[in-house]
Figure 1: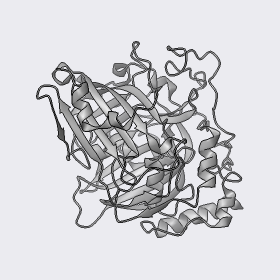
Figure 2: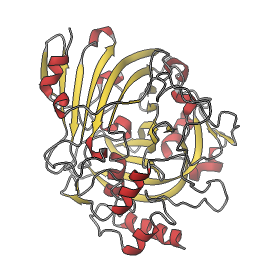
Figure 3: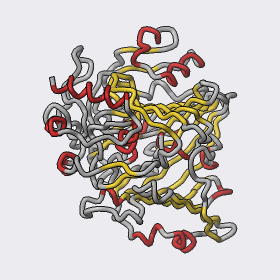
Figure 4: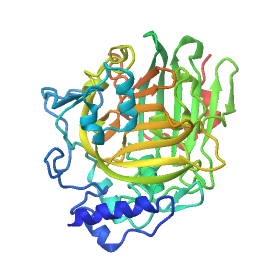
Length: 458
């Protein structure tokens, strides 16, 4: 009965999305931790049994796990490696499963008969530490949206809107998805052209601090970034030593995201105001636009956001094999390696952004499938002004049972207007890499523009 009430809430939210609505009612809040998880996911399985009950997720390392550094990170063991697909959906039979497929993935199937999705049994592995869930429930009445952008206030170390009343609230849940307070990783980007030619676009190292998820703090001052990232190019040789710094704020209505670049050839740091919206990222081989990083990056101001509803959809999930594979192995001609990409049936929030009147962007619409258990994006696609799917992104989710916490693994981005695709992976598949690592928190001065030049090399 409580679950039915929750779905009625979703329907109301979909009709009046885009407005800043009232906080959850006491009756709704009582569902968190009972019929709903702390993140607002329905605990129960579905009627047909194809989605199981959430029982806390995969919170401990599986038997035999031995990370390279003896503590955490790669290589991960796939606990479901022996499972066989339940379904193989291609263009030939996709009409039978159309209600559980997003429009972008269906278009990819139409384009390439060799592309299909292999659907495996569903496992609700998403798990966080207890304090993450506790904070989300206890602080549920604190957050609110402010301004036209909009920004967010009153939120810290929690999923801000586990019972979202608008598309903007749902997107802020995605923007503020759980991350370790400080972590570093390497990531490699490859590009496959329409003729089947593979090229390596870049190999970079990055370090991130997310003060929003620092539970030792009580809040983040509105005039300070809540998150900062420094990335350094390691390959190709022509760009070695190039660094990028990006900082982001909670009050988008007051503080725009900011970025700087350091060029070793010029030995100087410059502001990079173009690092946002539909500007093309050069380190992606000219494929990715900046507000598509990890599906969505930046501010919400250009679009009206709407919750379409919560649906049972196929998304890439529990993809330990994919994150452990070398980049080249994942990238045959036309599309990613379907044998490495595991799909499962999950309940997702479908959120749609429609370009506001008077705003300019190459994409007229953006659609996101947000996993109910984690608020991570499983699938994203953008539609151009002619109504055609422009970009499609698959973000295979994986539970890092050593942390514990879920994350998006590889990022597969298709440009369907040009017939090319790119693949970005935090390369556990490179034998010299440790993967995604927790590190000690850096001081804020580490993420100052002047510090880029101090760490620069020719």
